[in-house]
Image 1 (cartoon, rainbow, N blue to C red):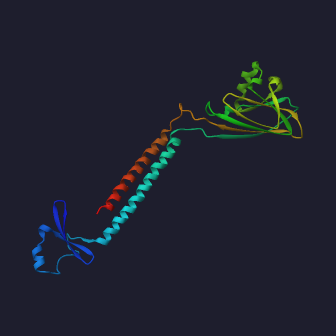
Image 2: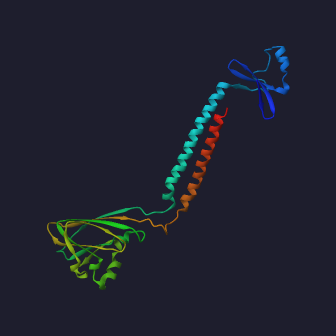
Image 3: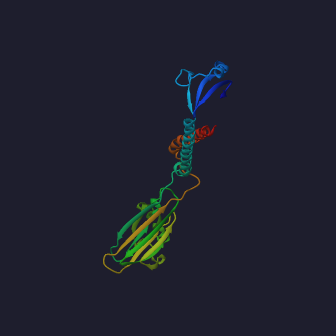
Length: 256
């Protein structure tokens, strides 16, 4: 068989199921080979001669296709993971925080619990879901409007810890409503929940308060995370290189 590679032609002969390289057409005397058959041709092991097996070549091609597909899948997986994680990694978002506290009630209903979740929010935005459960006491509820105007600024400044007991003389009792043993409210920034355990109904009265604070995502003023970007760029390059390399390897395996 004569095979052209580039601008040169080469001679191969078949022996059984294997092909053997003889040499360049320009260096082989075909008429001499046909007129004088010989078994002394350097079909194996000679310098400058290669042994080529159809079986081995076919296996290599199939293996190249399989490995190429695997590499492409890995590269696509890396790019897909980056696409999913990119919005979460490039921007610093505040997670949801849950705060629970058990408060004992003392006295005869002359103190009022002020709950101010905004002091625990990392940014001025979001909401706080406050759940109040009372044991052996009845509750009345109001908002910050019940605080006396002359004392409102001072009380708001003191609420830096998120909750504080106020005296009944600091509020207007007519603003309080209800007769609760449990209460749930959603507070926006700046809002205060006032809880008044006005009637003791048993031994060891107490209030359990749980505040779930959720930070809203704002379209502006979000902190950009450059450190994550430095990690993501090399991963994108690796994924793209694996996809390209897998395609090249797969196409080589399919080439006849």
